[in-house]
Length: 312
Image (cartoon, rainbow, N blue to C red; front, side, top):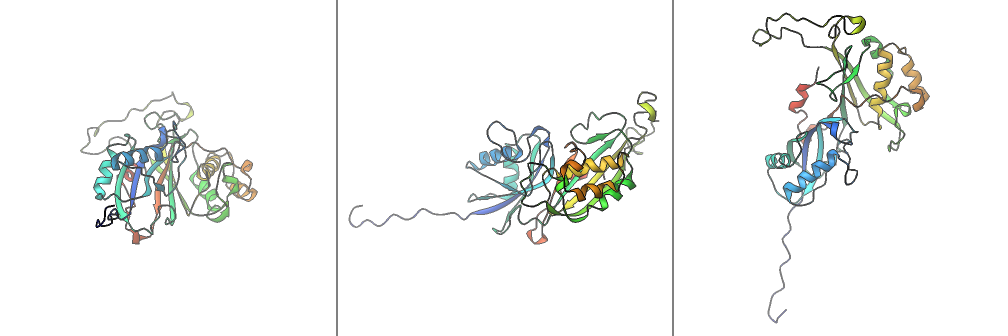
């Protein structure tokens, strides 16, 4: 530095911002949410790659709750930290321009530094959609699970009742679960039987006035492929869940609903605190992470258009 030359000014710093995003995804093509290294397709990997391409810098995210392979997300919430300033709609459109068709950012909100996608969540909600029909689904493959035996609503409700509250859920815990404790608070299991759409759909519909002619005699004892065609929706809400906890509970509920076990068997399974006491893990098809619950003070959206797609 020559004599008389002033010291160089320090580089300007930009304030770090925390941005929350709501993400929907179809999990069928992915090995779950969490990144697992090069060559393994995950939702987190695809999202971070898209965000980094949009921001032209490395972006990492923290999610509200990891999902398994094949599980779908309706309103997964993540947060990211960046010194890049963009309007919320730019994060949505920018990320989506780099994302594959089965993942889409639904909304973006700048949040205070105290917000944390995982630690600020007061609960998490899941829904399992199950098709009860004599023949397997085609158009809904991957979007619903399937059972061909009739399910008993009252029996499943009775079995589910003993699970509500704070319990040791070791019987419903996967061997690879990393939770420090098997004790979790399960606030609700709500089971709904949803009738399938029927013709005529409505006065203004192109199908109005048609008389349904259903297949007869080709689907076994029910005499018609659609004679008892219904969807079941199982809603779960809890503070947090063990790895495969919901899928293992579902396996037991289906065993009770189909008559293979009595409702009181669920209490026996719970008390055993042994994974071998429960039914096999149910298929991930039809399992949706509806999203976390947060305090209203954060002002985050808690619904997306995809919620209206699920049977109720």
